[in-house]
Image 1 (cartoon, one colour):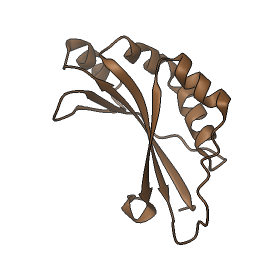
Image 2 (cartoon, helix red, strand yellow):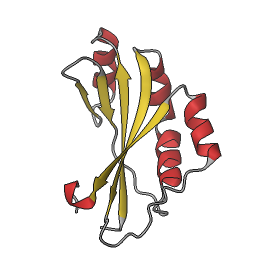
Image 3 (cartoon, one colour):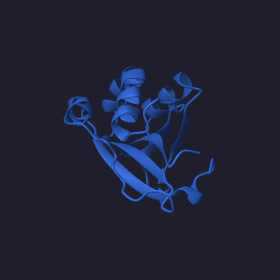
Amino acid sequence: MSDIGFEFDILIKGERTEAFDVFTAANPDWGCRYGKNGGFLAEPPQLTVDQPDASSFIALHVDAYAAQLSALRVFGHGHGIRIAVYFDSATMTALNLGLKPSTMALVSALGYEVEFCLYPSTDHGDG
């Protein structure tokens, strides 16, 4: 594993509706489930990026999954993209996610917020 890795998930607040079930059936390669306290979590297949930075990772996923992001936008409320960041704190002296305003503007234009969750790489299944 490199010193840093990412995972891309989509979180939507709201009650379970038939629309979420239709989305789940239409995207069988996605991991979709409901939260214990309501809400919907969609985990698309994770794509590989050449550059190990959050901006490239987010842009790749937003471009690849634009249709699904747009479809989910009409469901529920409180739309968010969660980026799990796994890093090796023993080898990294500084954590720079490499975010760019253009990437954040792209996510915002789709009506989503971005949330970052930081984890030591030992918590990651690939580490």
